[in-house]
Length: 373
Image (cartoon, rainbow, N blue to C red; front, top):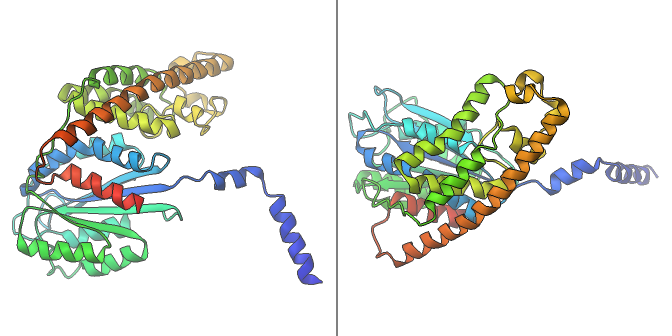
């Protein structure tokens, strides 16, 4: 009798759960997290510059593989004891523009003896990154370097132990070898095998990293600038300034490379379908209201920008609604251009003669395969 009462009670409890709880579980997004563990000593200069140029196409490859995913990317830069730093961690983040800004600051320097602090860098990536251990998640690491690890540092957790932990946590570890050093290749193959990943050899300089210009780049950049004009920064003053600076980042990228700025805008546009973002990360009231993450009526007065603070509450709501509608219309126009751009790039690549593996292409291809797996 007691067991029957218990079952009835359980059934009643499940039936009376808040609808929002059931909905939140039903609409939970898959998670894709990618961390790069990158040797930043002097010999890696060419590859690092190539990574700066192609971070947006790599990010787009993740979106193309899983458009609905919650995407987070991070970086562990490493050198060796005695250099400016041993490891420098940029935490996994949805804010790819912030990751890009940090990547631009990296310089290839240091590195006296041949081995580097690979063991410590892998330990930071696997054990000290804030990985999301959700059920429907993909966690991928790319170790990128040209020199073997110091196995004589007593304080380090050696890579076989770190890889055993990675395997327990379903973190895939790939090993990208820059150059052809045989002692590094032996270790990199071992890391890939024990990390359930791929061993990927590329030229020392990262290979011929090609940025493809398209007839649609200029118009894409113009539309993205208009979309950036719909951003309403809010929150703490420091956050408002950071959000405002992101709206200006496109122009600085475009000045250096229109094709790269077009790749950046294409990535943000593809993400906008699920995030409503015009810039990545927090701090845009229009995106947060459009996505249901916030309500302008609930934002503290001191966290509003000056132009909204000068308005009445109903005027604020009307302004947000206007900007949401404008952004939606612009994003629809931009999506059509991005589709044309993607087709142009795919056709150009298909016609090009085969070349040696390059950092961006091998990473993109590996990501697509492992996310699908």
